Image (cartoon, rainbow, N blue to C red):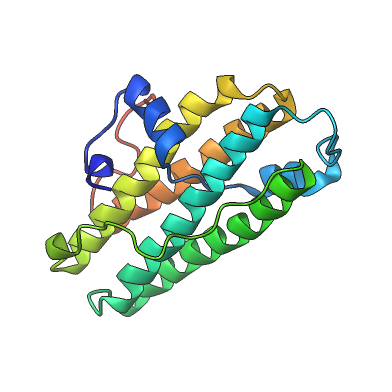
Length: 189
């Protein structure tokens, strides 16, 4: 998990995505992945697409656990705690729909790990928790940049591009909560 505490290069972001990313789904992506387009058929699904979606599911489960850690840390003041729980709720919805999509495409959804290697010893104040969450969301943005061209199904690629926007919004809100410039540059990398 400590790899998310650094800003990954695009090449590293692709490896992180294939290993463990912080993927989140937007409403548009949820509609696509829920089978409202041509994604529901089990036959013809590219196994790599299922693998990417399962990787996303694993990352969603990890994000749920990370936000739970922050919520239980007793370091977050009420408005920030509410924000963390809202983002955790997004991740829970995404995980549920990703699992259903993996099944619809003929795959077996991954399960949450029994434990994650979070930098608990580095979380001593609210700002530490916010920085940890912001780095996770930033890593997810980078992962989506790497994932979009990997999908064989172009509808999934479009959904991933849409999801990237959702991740970027989480990242910007967390940066603002830290008192940092919400959008630090004109380009996402």
